[in-house]
Image (cartoon, rainbow, N blue to C red; front, top):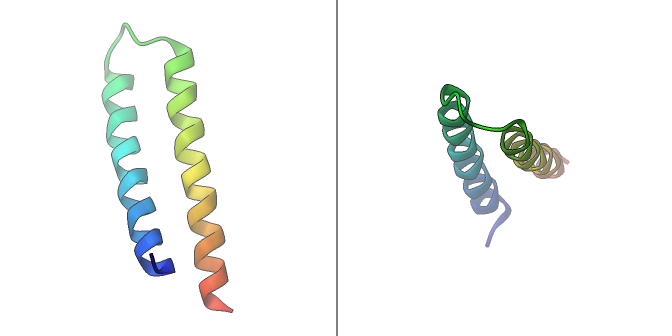
Length: 58
């Protein structure tokens, strides 16, 4: 998989997690741990995206 393809894949996952997070936040019965877990996953993907995008600029 090329770096660009990996970036595209991670961007799709990040968008999917954002959609899932918004859905979970709209539900009053969601526990804080589930929200925190989604936010951590989303942040890890964002960090990986930034690292990959930074490596393609050099």
